[in-house]
Image (cartoon, rainbow, N blue to C red; front, side):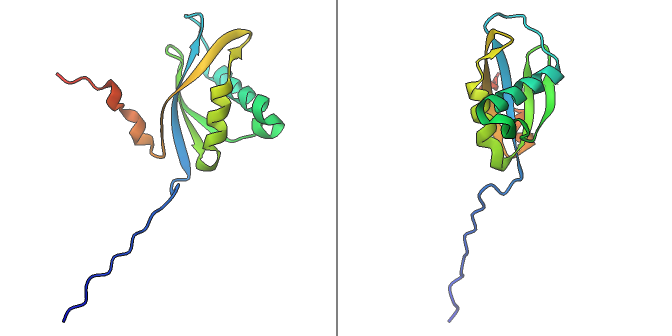
Length: 123
């Protein structure tokens, strides 16, 4: 008689080394322009405000930044995703102008940020 097949279930938590975030910066007054270097400095200052000098040294990369729409794609170590996300959420001003960061998408796969099913238009 044949033995029943044995299956082993494997679950990987945070198998990816990085997470990718698609974010947008929203100012209270529209028409504000910001260069990529200032955008990264804004994120570093948000990390410094929340976590001190250790937070300011937190490693992340701005992979893409669109100056017209103030949207960016960030790459961060999976272990620090929550720290970066919390610093972005608590960001409230830039040069005494009220602003907010909206996290649009988060994924361990960069390709997943290329499309958004919520913005899909079917004909």
